[in-house]
Image (cartoon, rainbow, N blue to C red; front, top):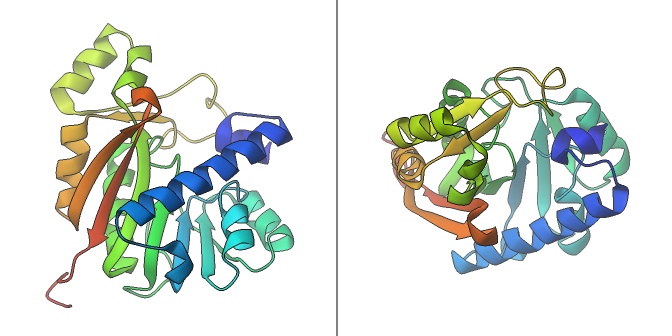
Length: 226
């Protein structure tokens, strides 16, 4: 069930393979932004679940301080018992997190903003901006343009008009709360949203348009402080 809540997959081998692939993609995307994960001091996996991606970073970069945060209490308890070397906190559904401002050099979020509703998304973007170091790197995934093909005509119309759609899905109904279901963004919408909080924002399509990555840098001046 922990694996299912992260990926809607039950099989152990597929879960691990996807996690390893995600770690490789994160490393590649970071490097293209001029950041070597091996050189970071502190890295946060926001929405770490039961460590699908983080487990690989703990193996590959033992000298980096990796943190994981998630609202799933069972997943955090499992990580604390099984992913030695990582530091894990249970998050509340809404901010703040317990970390001080500017604490992390890198923050990544996989399959988080693909699920948050709009109010939660905006609050968490502001919180991640707070705890990211000036010049630090944020990476997170969203559904790409092709992923919106699963929406019905009303959904596609709403996405074109508003740039954002959040819908309850059958797979997650009854398992996850209404604010954590399935979300779609247009490129223009999410870039504009993120650009108000981060510098050097980029949008990169991957997986044939099924997913995209949004990347940004921590502002060198935020709330009047550098």
